Image 1 (spheres, rainbow, N blue to C red):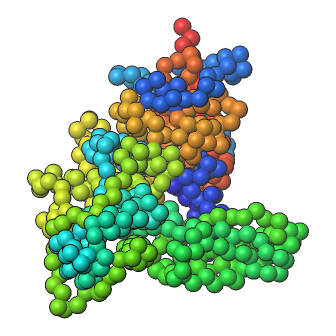
Image 2: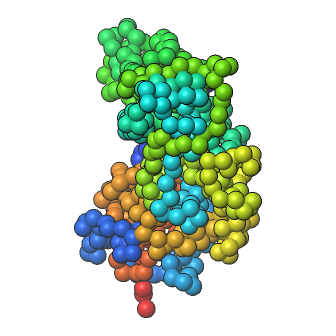
Length: 534
């Protein structure tokens, strides 16, 4: 989910209410690139075929480099850096266009291509995260569980309170547990930083930079809506699920202005929603037009583990299980007995959410799963609940090492992929257009990977893109957007030419995201026009 700096829009405030302008997980900012009729991988809509009579003039493969350069040399792009690499998808690919394809660019959310592709290869499409409730013993005949309850977290990005948590507590209840003596404890084999040190400070309150915790629940964020009130009254703020936010404070200093007033449009008066770092407080300020549509937003939870434990206690209480706290007379014994377990969907489904929606939290938790596997292999130990007792290594570093190790094993130069995280949120990530094309070629026949990418004007971050163009339905690609940077990489299936793989990146620009998108779209739409001219 790649983002725009909020300072460029609302001064020092972060305008959560316009989050769609900040994220490449929202369709309005993204540039499309990539595939269409994918016989090996995914079923595209019937309208994916290009009408040859209405399509623009054909482009011969030998002309593609020149056509790309024409777009890249537009005056408005002159100060920017542009990288384009296009190749065929055959075993020995033919390079069709290469514009600075071997130079480093910030990939934004295109970094997810490496994380998801290699997670499928290393962890396997059937891999599942597991969340458990454990204890040192079974409940006694009276239903009392002595020595406490253990929550074992593995970082399941899909775990939520409506299904996963209810299931765990129901399983516990079905085991005969009526009372827990000794409190609730937590344990995990996943180690590593919850935040990446190169993420921007102002992003940390946003849902797309939610803390990456092994005790993730409801994506570690709370959703809200703001809508106008009567003129002169504060805007109406509502939590999507008030029960999940009952311990939050909302300071509403906003106001509703007449639509014909310009006051609410001034930079210092733009409506903003800010969460002071580390606090469960939202401060709403600025103005909103009385004619404005409701705006949706989301805020990151400052302490995911504490939030998980709070929701667990609440669900235990709702299902009639009493919890007595730990006392010195109740020894803290290690967990040995499984009482309840909830599995995530298969990895093949998780990568679809990661790529189609450009979900940063999913990508980061996949990276940490790769890190755990990397260290387990390194130390020649099997994964398990006691793995954390053997090592205490950073899952972020281990995940990145796993990616580099895999790249080297398939003869992709690891030095061409320099990652600081798994999602692309960090501006310290660097890679080349050629390296992206290489990883895409490697997984071109992987059905699980191919179905994870958005399809132009069909779904995901490309759902509203390429409408009424030659790219509709025939481009399948991953988007990526930052302030001043944009990326689009994937597959395209021209009607009269074999499938091509491409990567387009623009960095160091002062153009708006919409203008950058227009440029990348223009390059991407050259590809469906390819046709053999011999």
